[in-house]
Image 1 (tube, rainbow, N blue to C red):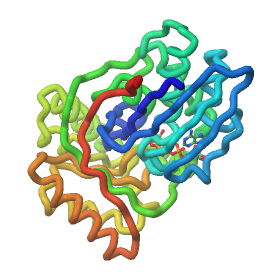
Image 2: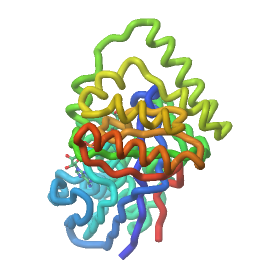
Image 3: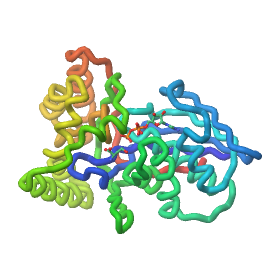
Length: 291
Ligand SMILES: Nc1ncnc2c1ncn2[C@@H]1O[C@H](COP(=O)(O)OP(=O)(O)OP(=O)(O)O)[C@@H](O)[C@H]1O
Ligand SMILES: N[C@@H](CCO)C(=O)O
């Protein structure tokens, strides 16, 4: 079987709603494929009991269909679904890279981004590229109508995942329809700062660029303990904290030397709020890899 490791991703990073994304060094899905007459999917691992194995309902199945590449697909989930860590995108990106190789389709990673986005369309109703782009290309990505831009960055991160389920569909319902112009101005400034910070590999600039007054406050309300976890992470040295993806994951940018303390502070704060959680000490990393 051909094996691909496909990373978790965090898309939005606060100020870049539906545009910014980053590949995380860990956790990751492992996708295995072999040629078959028709597509079948077998799921194991974190939260796999909540993921349909029917190819018509699984993001990897949508990708197999889009590439006309029927296969026996086995996915070991390292990225729990409905996490805000691009779980559905990791499987879609992993399947796209694996099936492209298996069937010798010859598509570049950039060309595979819209193919993998077909999987996202299946689960969230819209073909977002902000998670699948970093899952395939790695680094920090800017997914705009004009195309995807990639920046090689390696910012240390802590992601804390509470034992709460927030689906992307639900979290999109709370996004406000309008925004005050001063909030838009603030967001543009933050987004520019974050992008510059990625180019410079500067955790301070990236952290302050992660603030967002438009989408994040509404989504934070879906996460018990969010304000306390954010405060605890900042007090422990985080340079910025925001909701990861559509939530409920919470992501903090930081210096490497502070990572362990921040992870502990976030876990404790969720615990104080009566919510179990787990923390990943990670960083911006590579895209999916063939093994
Ligand atoms: N291969 C797959 N892996 C994970 N989830 C899948 C897969 N195929 C279908 N799904 C469905 O997708 C939904 C999870 O996707 P969702 O976008 O809500 O979470 P996420 O990918 O962790 O979050 P985000 O996009 O905010 O980072 C669940 O309903 C799950 O059943
Ligand atoms: N940008 C998307 C990420 C989930 O696909 C959102 O925040 O809703």
